[in-house]
Length: 469
Image 1: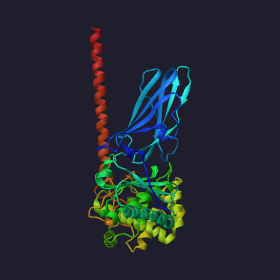
Image 2: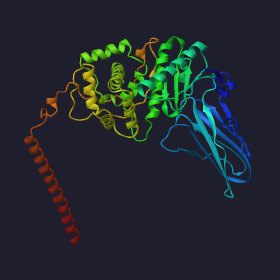
Image 3: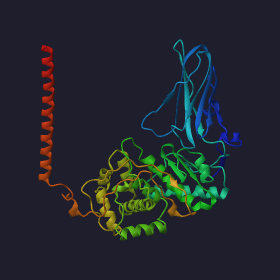
Image 4: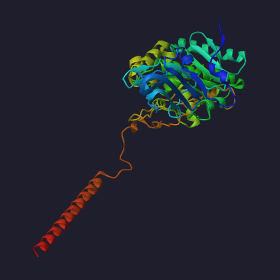
């Protein structure tokens, strides 16, 4: 049963404009402040900074205070950041330290944690309990609605009908992913729904103005700006970002990576069939033999609008082909293989019996496209660029759920023929001429060397004659 509860105590401090919010350690961590510690709190100046403050009285002079801090997220190991704030030594100490988020920006809803290590002149060490606080603004009166064990929708505006619609769409998205793609939620996912794109932009740093939604798999967080007039877009975009979280959790590893076409293809696949505009563009690319190669889709997508849209449509088509032809279980096996550190070529060969080039040929045959001409060398791929979902331009069009990357990548030539795989000598100087020029260069260098040596010897002889005189 759905129930609405008050999500955050921060909202009680709502004032005009942005006001820093103070979270006391005893409330954040639900523990008592240790004896001698009179102040242990964090002041949130969202989204710029968080300032940790400590006041302590001790029977022995304090010589060292260390702040250990971080945020709760998936990592490859235990990561503990340390800060060494300045203070005046003595038995009564007050100190503070500010975590500047402009250096390490965190998404809204992140869970901050901290503790203090206090060492006196006798070498005795006191460690405070680990405390937590939610990194979130206090400009909105946030409320929360839960749907099952794995969905928490946080919102501050919108009637009950709107929130129920979004909650149901998210739940259906989770069910679809589990049944069709084998992607299961293994921990609660927090979705922060901003009333519009401007409010969402105010809550994040370093995101482009066109950003409409963003997934943070490491923190199990999705943020998105949805107003009632783009509700259809919002439902699809929310499921799209949820899928990124599910893929990120299943494939989390410090060994491997998921190619962009697979990650984005699964996200678009979770929305349902392609909208008519995207399907028409894909059909035209098939008819005109202008499809992008699968290898070129493994890195960041093009920043050119038409190519970006086609990249998403092709990615959907690739994922749809793999699931339709080989089943959901194979898709799960592929993702697990990538998690275990195998390359995409190795993972495909292990799961389906072909590499990327084999996938390309099988996929093209299934959609009745021209065979792909494989180039002599592999295309160099840059690191994929993680990009947010853009806001729709004209309302609730599925076609608006495309993303633009800031890192264009080179593609292998689609017009190259197999007979052209062996490079020709056209445009290069003949071999004989090359050898003649090389010999002349060597002779020139030799003569220059002889001249320089002769000059040095002559100078030395002249100096010797002067000394005799």
